[in-house]
Image (cartoon, rainbow, N blue to C red; front, side, top):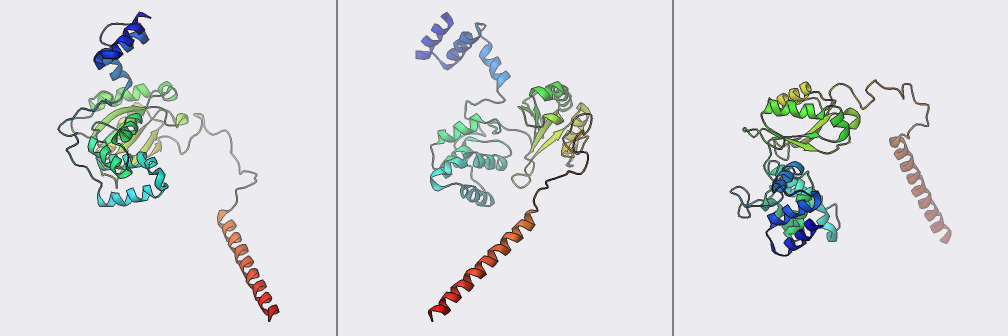
Length: 295
């Protein structure tokens, strides 16, 4: 309770760092004075508090390329004019692809200008979703799944292997700017755990890809990274099987399905077209007959 009272008092007039410290004390009951920095490292992949730097400030211009402006127009066409702000996420994603995998202040400001919204509205989105990088990343952003199924299947061993192989810790980049090692929560491939995803920014928007690599071992994880380094295309998806299935192999759907089968959509489309044509011909014949009767 005393910690909570101190927090309330701090909110009224102390510096932000002191507020964060007291907030932690109120939540944890600790007062070691080191927690704010440590928790920021533990729970966030990157800082969300903007500080102008030589390569990231409002004076550095950003604009979409002519080719990407065509994509901007296409994206905006999906939304009614009064809901264009809903295009914020895909436009930020496009800007990130063009800008080598991260969003500068100027890139976010450009998106706000296109959408006709206050810049803070774009900042709110960019700092909320982990898919947006607010600091530089490597050409290949390797994000290991850190959720329970992958962790139980060896995700931490894969992280250790890549960390040692690349000479970096999690959320760091290699000195040559080739790789960034990150983490992401559940990516929905639990049956093929463990896995990681690689965002490929090596060839800009045209060559951008976002591929899953599943059923990994520390050895295959390192092999994939080395293939990427050498410009090769590793096998996407599971590294040991052709589809998602139990570890012991497929146990269901082992014979030809009995039905009912899915409809042949092409056949259905043709049938509907024929019916529409017949209806049109019948309507025309009826109109002609009515015109003849009047005469």
